[in-house]
Length: 230
Ligand code: SAH
Ligand code: MG
Image (cartoon, rainbow, N blue to C red; front, side):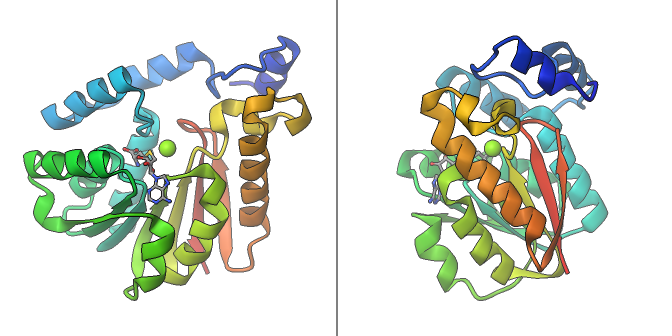
């Protein structure tokens, strides 16, 4: 995508939800992604049919790359949904133990079944409930933390993630571009998305200025921030 890609859609008046990159680019990149296991393909289909916001293929591929490079042994995920990204993490980090938190009981129940089907259940601990209630009780430190739950609570999740991440560990945040809308002036964003956009922009600013984190923002998937804790 060119530097002015974002300007292009602003000029188009495209205030509706738009992909952050050209849709041809997105589908071409997806076509280059390696074949997934049968469980993952089933979850992709279910997520599509039921509008469950699982990570995009390019984002999952980046998570897997980070696992291969960083070799985390303990991973924390905030926002399990039906277990799609956790299964990617478990497949890519064969040695890792994963703690994942989900507030929606029905989704958590499905995730548990899916973890068994993917043969990763013994390495994944699923915590049911609000991450903000459970995170303060966690004491162990993690090598990698993936934040992917309620966008309005990202700043609060980050405070806990920072405490729980070891020095040199990674904190990865999903959806930091929010369909590209985060790149637009909030006042010009459709009213129903405005407060989410404001919060995400505040969150990105928090990451940018954070005294303990060095962050790289990537236009991958729905926008991902990769932070290293000093
Ligand atoms: N990481 C998943 C997608 C997660 S979607 C994947 O890529 O496959 C975000 C999930 O976060 C939703 O299922 C939602 O129910 C959950 N969630 C939202 N707020 C939460 C909270 N405060 N604590 C725990 N989970 C939360
Ligand atoms: Mg996400």
